Amino acid sequence: MRTFEIGQTLARRDVHRTGRVWSEHALRVLADTNQALVTACMPGAETRWPTLYARARTAGDPTARIKAFDAMAAGEWGLMPGQWQETELRMWKPPGAWFSVNAFYTPAGLRNWYVNFEHPTTRTTDGFDTFDLAVDLVIAPDLQRWEWKDEDEYAHARRLGIISDQEHQAVDAARTQILAMLREQSGPFADVASWTSWRWQPAWPAPRLPHPRPSGSHTTPSSSSCNGGAVGTDCQGRTQEAELSWHQPPGGRPIS
Image (spheres, rainbow, N blue to C red):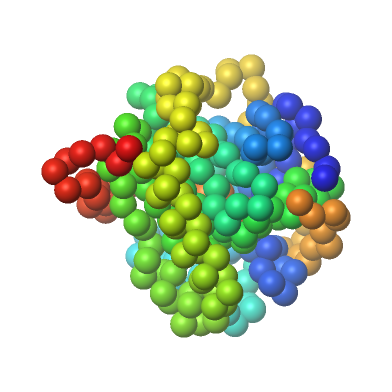
């Protein structure tokens, strides 16, 4: 398996089953072990997003995400350059997992955890490929509240055939796995204090994509081992608290 160096810049790419790139996101490597690949970025990190989605977001179109899925199903999309905005991001992606655990930070500190359900990684020369599977889990910093996000988009992607039955089964298993990790406080949830105190270092430059590619380009991966990433937030790392109705276990008990 290809190993990345600490401090290396790589590209996280969402790659459609046709081989076309759906999005790209530049990240800095923090650690690469047999437990997980840990990466991060800051506002200003280079990205490439589907043109329709990016433009509709700028215009404030609330149907943008659904339209983007329709474009994906039709095979009609291009990419435009962008930048990660507003939050610092730290991402934990274990090998073979159908999810990544992300933490979003503002100047006030850890804002929330965010589980992105996605394909296991395929490592490439420039980074790694995955594919965002629409549904996400938003978790409070103290791990005591959580809320499923974008179930409607997940159902729509299922209807369009973007997410297959096999992928649906994998997501169901990953949902069970991540909720068990929350209860057990395992994985990154075992070290909440360290994750809470983490910050992007001022000396680190904003990550840049290694090699810009033509819009909608195909990919040929090398040896195999992404949301948006955390793409599932809103392609900017933003999650509106007002949109969330936190789940709290009966009696207000912590998940653990």
